[in-house]
Length: 210
Image 1 (cartoon, rainbow, N blue to C red):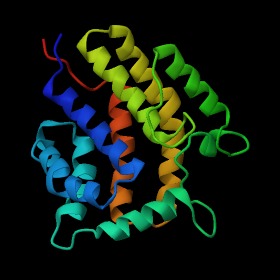
Image 2 (cartoon, one colour; image 1 turned 90 degrees about the horizontal axis):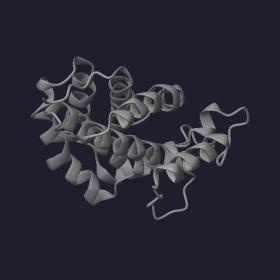
Image 3 (cartoon, helix red, strand yellow; image 1 turned 180 degrees about the horizontal axis):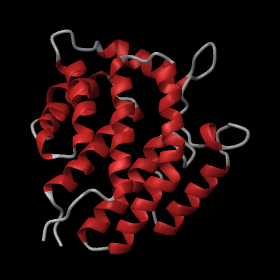
Image 4 (tube, one colour; image 1 turned 30 degrees about the horizontal axis):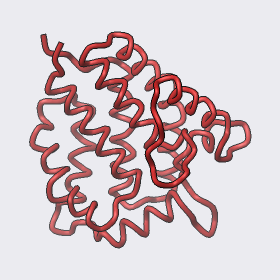
């Protein structure tokens, strides 16, 4: 069983979301604007309708003549996700959105660490991030999908369950918090793209090649 172009596209979008929500530096933003996002836009018409608008809007914001200033994006990333005088508007941790007492290192972090251990995976981020960080969960989902679409039906089922039952409930809440903070349009469109990709995975709307 080989991975289809539409499945490769989903994997590429997950990589894009990981890059944006991990916080690129100036060089990273420039690479996204000049290479990463334009390449995805060249194939957007071949993919599910729900993905077209958010990736097109993200591309328009990054690539247009009035494209986003990279220093502004770095500053906005810190305001939205790291530190802010009035509290972080949209923390990147599941436990900050779902647990009874929102905090880092909540039960969702413990559960996610157990999933990674069971799968034989380790966190490769330089900082000591809790396991329920958005980008760690996205990379875990990427691994399940890549393995599932290549050879493992069980990983396909696990990826759908993980996207639907674990990620979407808190990521939808995260997106609401993000949009309420009046973010830079790049992060607004990235939040919408993130939810759209997870919904595609959860619904299993990615066809394989025969």
